[in-house]
Length: 315
Image (tube, rainbow, N blue to C red):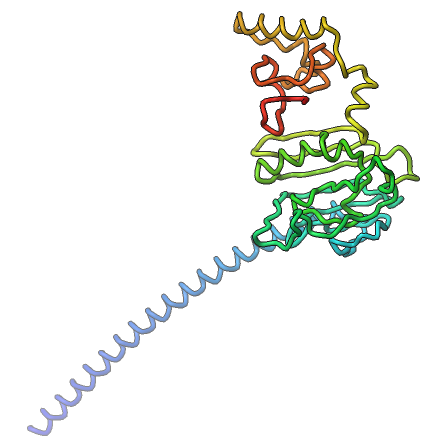
């Protein structure tokens, strides 16, 4: 009898131990399953992110491929001063990590320069000369030997542009140093850079490397700017258009108009703003008979572009 009881106790103990083992196994299995599910979910998220990134990069590559289609990409040193250009090529003319793209046509003429962002030169981190130049000189593009023409940067040294022939055009000295080109560069510097930059350069024929016209489009602090001008001495161009000098009647007109508007508090620029864009150019002001410069107390001043912020426009 005692033996039977002992056997029964051993049997119950064995059953109890087996049951505990099954519970522990089930618990471990549940935990293992949960861990697998988390890993699976993480893997799917990672896969989705990678796919989105791949699509984004692919779209960007496709856009760039379309833009660069038909051009051969070549590398040219930023300080290559030879003045030679190849036809139908694409060159990065940005110094350092900047990406500024220059395009030539079938005649080797520099016809377009674009940049998503203009990043100003930083002489604290970049190696430049005491005069703020990356190179000792600029490329000798055919035409710059003329005394009235400079080696004009499309994107200036101060804006991170190279000095090779793919960023240099023979440009009127006055235009380059004191005219619209200089004003544009100064405006970009004062704004701390620019975005969506594009330069379109045109020529009078296919035989020359001297441009006849420039058109710059860029964005400054959210404002789209378009600068367009001929490659010539602005003083001589204005003189040929009859926009330099003024008769006493013009001077009186300017003074009387200023006083009249100041007295009645109205500013009607419709007769001056011929294109109706709300802005008055120097050309428009002169054509309307107003003498230059326009000072900050003139009623036209708020509607004009004082690029060097000295209180005068057209000086």
